[in-house]
Image 1 (cartoon, rainbow, N blue to C red):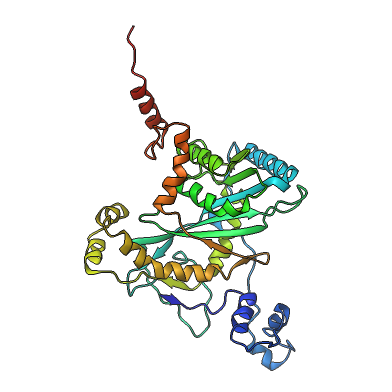
Image 2: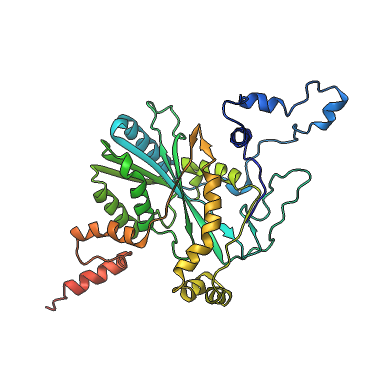
Length: 370
């Protein structure tokens, strides 16, 4: 593992240095530390040694260009109505914005890969070089799932970009994102926070794991509704290509700040495990060849996951530290799913599409020829 960033921000720099100081040491404020990066007299000869002033400007990234869609106005209105309803019943409501961040590549043993995407500039000291692998293909990846529990404002003019942020880190081999996994992990996050609250709002970008028109997503939402014993569950989504409208999307910028100058790699595994990985050329082959090495995969990815956790716990949104949740186990997912058997005992986790449900109905109700 390679971690070259000394501090994420001025606030984080103060916190890191404070841990090294003896007790009762006076700690300067953020503004005082910022002033020390500026010359006292900008016209003096010594001011040339200060390089805090950068030629920078605000600019929208091209990859975030807002594409038009005929349903954008309708989806924006739905989001407005969801916020209005949440404000009206804010004392008994929870508003959750959810999304998956783009996966983080994990390098092979001895060959770390930049956590930031290739081609993305990172900040380093003038006498340091950020050296990591430059190729695109990696066999392992880590998927960050982000949940923003919004502090619901008192009026519609208030900000919905405020609240507690939860981040979960999952391996992309045996813990791939799915509707039932997202619902189970959201259930675990909300279990201790639903006391006296009976209305849940869920807002997402409508990706494959959150598209509310999919039967697999609908079944997961029904299971969440039953497990939390809710009175009302309202799920909404952005228009296609309008994920920027989801408040949790802005959290990704903070996470990108945390993984600046971060190169990660997995640990070395047993010989048989390494042979299976070496003989695999894509994700499907890795899953097939490493089916009997699930524990080895977890052990190999544990060091980079722990490193990422330590970084995430140092991030914050409006003075609230990020929290990290553990990925759901297969037993937890199965226990979460079983509540649906109260509705239909013939349901299984393989019934994730409308066609599969129709096949069950055809088998249960034989056709009658007239």
